[in-house]
Image 1 (cartoon, rainbow, N blue to C red):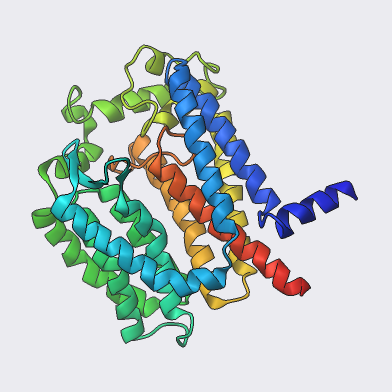
Image 2 (cartoon, one colour):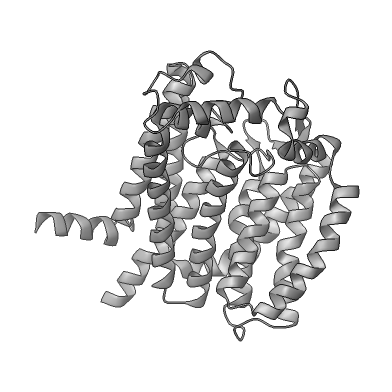
Length: 369
């Protein structure tokens, strides 16, 4: 009885989904263990990560208190505000590591593209929620424009990884809205020449080099292919059960670049092996499935479309990072969710889970009313 009342308190008073919360806490704990090893036991880095996780969980709790109906009303305003910030980045943004992605406000630096990970699926779900579904004609076109505008602005920064996530989030809303297969085929055919034009005119030389390196990393083993070659060595050396926590040689001897950020999955593979990877993937999959279940139980079209898109975007996040680390996808600079060292991306991820929890717990309140 006490357990049941505690669960009711968490769901009805705090508006948190207990199962999803436990899954996220477990994944965060795994991330801290791996980061401790990947950083060569750097306690300062761990403390920073803990503080960022605390902020991210706080944002999740705060967003969970906001009813989906309020998010629906604010969707267009949030999207408009985020778009203006993206335009300001191109005009006044701070340049770092060859990219112009931040707005320096003195006390803080904002990365507006992070807001778009939530704003794009929200505004498309808002636009479609009262339209006849499946979407057709101009409704599909308007939804595509909502997705295309921020994607192009972010590609100009350039930030290919974030642009891919934002485009995916918009596409998932359309798919959950029931976009018909022949329309998907037409859009795919239109996309092919766009990809070619983007390759010729839209991509920087280093981005094209990353794609070419994907097919033959050994062509430049000490240059553009170095990351992938060392990553594959680390993954393969882990075997079935791994070398054990803190015993990875590729990371500790500093052969593996970006070992605490983009390539932390290689560290995990080396230390925990195939068996550990399977358990990690199962944990990620249970989080995605919980998100999809919450979306399926939503009471409104807006909440269902938004919840499904957020859950599937998280899956894309995981898939792209693992794909680039094992050499199946080009390196696009996406961290492994809640495992890699980072700041803004963690907060955005937890914000999306806060929205999912709001969708679930406010639905239960309506049911009980």
